[in-house]
Figure 1 (tube, rainbow, N blue to C red):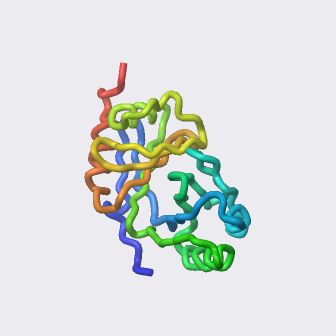
Figure 2: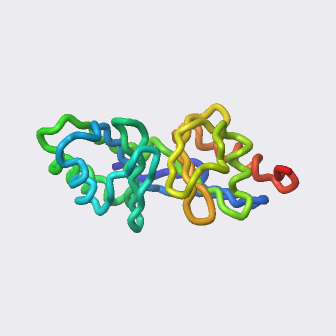
Amino acid sequence: MANPVAPWGNAQFDGFARIREIGPLGMITLRVKRDVPGLAEAFAALGLMLPDPRRITAAGEKSAGWMSPDEYLLIVPYAEVGAALASLAASLAGQHHLAANVSDARAVFRIEGAKADQVLKKIAPADIDRLAPGELRRSRAAQVAAAFWQDGEGYTLVCFRSVAGYMMGLLSHSAMPGSELV
């Protein structure tokens, strides 16, 4: 695996909400139908629970998010991606699936603070007020494909690394002091 290169050197911005580029995180896209025998056991072997539709589950530093009827996003420590891929291959041997390391193709941001929701409300066509903790939403952030979820006192947002600089600028501009929503 290549050395991880953060797009902004772990950039951060402190406005009415705090924006941080976090990572590197290990990320695996798993394409598999939910009814494949042994799928729940494959997740359990990684220390994770199979998430329900539009949900994300977490266990320590690991998470599993439902992305679509046949796609999951697994988040593990960066150094554990190889072992996680091997575990999935062993657990799902003989079953139709695809597991790919997308760690270096994604950027991850944290939006934190009492008004963190306002940052997403400005840029995402989603009802952020109805986004429950543990609910994963695939949508857009401005014109960028993104996935985000609420956890703790903020939100985590994942997008393509190729637009990480744009995303950092977009999130920072949306969190500028004095631009809070009424």
